[in-house]
Length: 361
Image 1 (tube, rainbow, N blue to C red):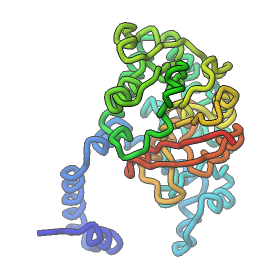
Image 2 (cartoon, rainbow, N blue to C red):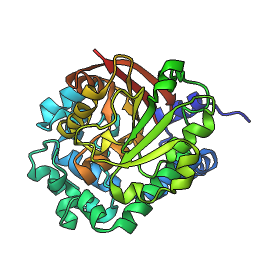
Image 3 (tube, helix red, strand yellow):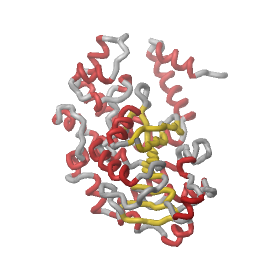
Image 4 (cartoon, rainbow, N blue to C red):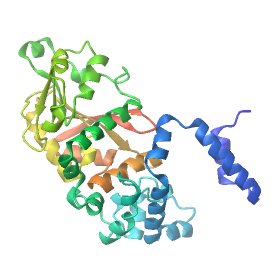
């Protein structure tokens, strides 16, 4: 028997009223969910502590009287700005999809989540922007960055987890997206121009993956991060793929000038706009006219964002007073930094991972 997604959605809109039928349908739907979910769906269901998330979401939504607002206007297609206006919450705090209400989530699990509604109420439902005053800092007594700095082993495990986590996801390094921005001319190669600077690139996982995926692209790569990260890189392996590890604070002047590409993966979502601007601000003066900043991050759609995207967004807000961004937010950040947004290439439709390409004005 073939059951279409459309038929299931139609059933969801008009479920049976009989209690027994509803329980049986609930059990069958749960079994179907487990049968068809992919590895990433399973990880989100188990790792991101959905029960605590649901409680925190419902509590904060109730505090803002959003349930009452939606119930009183069942046929209205609500926009985030509208909900912000009637609830008093800052619109950026609300998700891209009103149907999900507030998908509230924190990186450290239930302990942090249970503090979230009160934390938001105390702030007057303003979007947090200072990592030292994040929910994580309130619960743990220090920012997540300070905690990782104090515990290098934990930091290394966290970054290793992030690298392994992304291995399960689709990649842009499969030939589906042009690599023209990375290509050096013969004159560039003769002059020793750097092909790519991986800013905040950890232990160089992306540089290694890039070299495996595109062996025909010649040129030196540089991976920059704090010393605790680049010190973990095997120097002989790095040399074999023309990779130079460099300890560097991305809030300071970029030392590598005129690289073809300045690459940032999962960097800017760790920071609110003011700090993210300061990171990009260091890159713009270093760029040549044909340089590009290639940002590998999530682009949250204006409507219909799934719960996994909102998990990421609220994780960043709760742990670091940061955020995942919409196209509008990316464009504003890039233009403020003296560049223009040239392209957005979505390479993972489910998670909305994309290459965001910025070039000089």
